Length: 366
Image 1 (cartoon, rainbow, N blue to C red):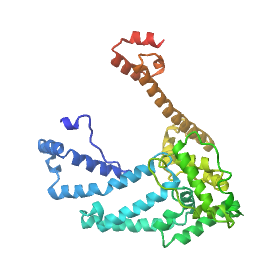
Image 2: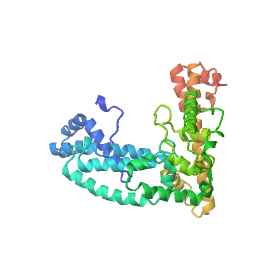
Image 3: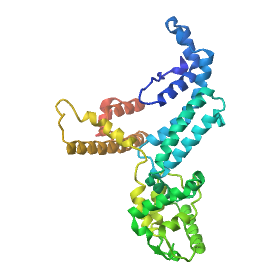
Image 4: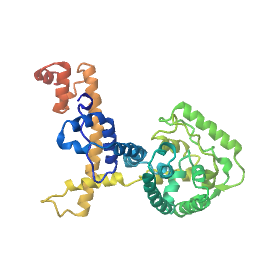
């Protein structure tokens, strides 16, 4: 069937609930093709869903779609710890919407809403434990786009308790944050040159905000942490400050204004928001053990694992470089002549595109 060319059925995976959503989505997408196949194969006619079952599938397709997006966000390589609170809050709001049948969950059957009620009870229990983890909140407020404003908006009844716990965490690990100084010096020791990775427009906007902060600053001596919390958050703009490199770039440019907090940011912000990346790394340890390598020392396994991780990271960079070089050579009629290092499959691709024999390819490469 034309629509299903080069498409394979998605099978269930016991350890990943997102596969259930993928199967439902694919079935609804190719419903006509599946129906045609089932009706023309008597042995599997019993598998054709009934109308009530189709309605249930369409409702189920609405439920896990946003949750899959959030799962992929958390599961990517080194998700930001500073953005993890947003994910928990979004998850809570979506579960509440599904429980109450709001927004695009309005068509959900009552049985599905009841199921989400149980899920929300578990999420609330987990959220209460999350409140005791001050590190997540500390990393969150180190984002200049949030500071403490989002915590105040999302947790108005617990804001004071969370803020007190967070301050205690900061002062316990970085006691110098308790030192009070004259806030009038804010901005005078700032970085005067524009970083290479910051645009001129962003640099000018930052200088303007700094000048405004200096003009409006109070004269009473306060600690750097208190000034940070009380300072107005940066305006959110997806075109200028929503990139993956925004936080390191911002702290690099403003380290002169927030000398102690800049050191704190270097400790907290690189922390990963989940252990998925580490689990992915240790999941490959089964390739390091074998019948003849079953008694490795812990230090040996550690070194091998780190080496494998480093090699994989280098391989990803090299593959991108080779791909770009290959495309450049093809477009420039082999001017660079670097394809002799590439795998046979790249040779074959080049030969097909240029319609040249292998001997001519080797000659050009040399």
